[in-house]
Amino acid sequence: MVVVLFLQLANGVEPHLAGMGQKIFFDTGLSQPVGQSCASCHDPKQAFSDPRPVSPGAVQGREGNRNTPSLMYAALIPAMAVEDVYDENSELSYIIEGGLFLDGRSHDLLDQVKQPFFEKNEMNLSGEKELAARLRRASYAPELRKAFNGADWENDKMVAGLAYRSLVAFLREPLFRPFNARIDEFWAGKEDAITPAEKRGLAVFITKGECAKCHFVGTGVWPKPLLTDYGYDNLGAPSRGSKDPGLGELTKRENEMGQFRVPSLRNVALTAPYLHNGSIGTLKELMEFYNARNLEPERWGKTDYPETVNHEDMGDLKMTKEEIDDLVAFMFALTDQTLLKMKPDDVLPGVAEGVPSTESVKTFFESRRDRIDPAAER
Picture 1 (tube, rainbow, N blue to C red):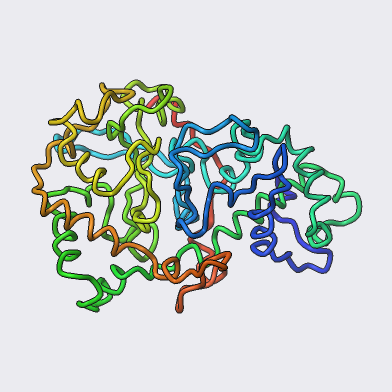
Picture 2: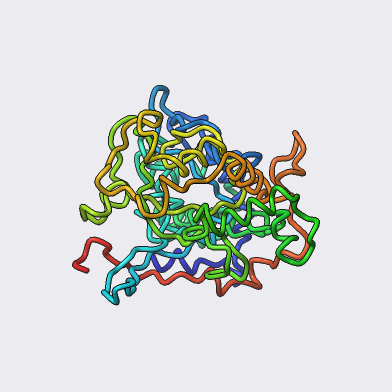
């Protein structure tokens, strides 16, 4: 709704959206029944992820079917787009990149923050009328109300829209994009920032492990490496629960069934368990899965969509045990130090020195609100 997108205070000053977004993020009164907040499934000390394979919902006995992804760097995920590329045979093909949720069903972050409120296995609200009513009763309601003129405060869509915008502003804050892992120091020229084992692991990451094919170490949508290409792939994750078609459910294309968006590897050591369904528990087990999945099918069991599994880039990498150990060691060099420095009583990580303000990098966050249809003929 356009009026929500450009909402301002009566005196012409936009409300402090990020501050309100933080309050909404931790508010356990916005679920039905009460008791669940965004932070219930996105623990700041776990890089805003969930250490459980899947997260339980507000309603006892209900749970999701996917592992909760980290919110660190989530604001830097580009909006979904269809790109045309040429393969090694100069044949034109099309790939999907970007989009929010692991299946890309939300075009951008503003779309994404809405859905958990109304998902029956998450916060379980009946609609924007109920969300707006709860926001009007919140302890921070007087602050929210300052953003409206007169009767607009009674407009459910506008009140809910302000909540969405506030959450987006919060997720764009510098604390979510510190880029202060030891690998960043190493890439900035500090040779002793990572250990010899981690350096060997970086070499495996780029070469024999073929990780960098999808987890780019170069820059793209941001001036520093995000360790992902934001594309989609079927890794052959061990089945857990009902079949999950991922991107294929959105596009209805057979060759995209079971594909999920490639995550950033930043803070990956804090975000176990792994893969879209939380089916693999440790980093070492995950590296062993990538290395020898094709050779040890009995170890991993069945996968949901075997016909679309990527057998070209993983599954028989022939890494040695020592190389796997080094690769695992390297993953620990990707953890932001602001997260490691959190104390038991800290609610949020601190802000790393030198991280640009949201306002100063605003152009990176601009998102076109037009939509693409990934199911369209391509």
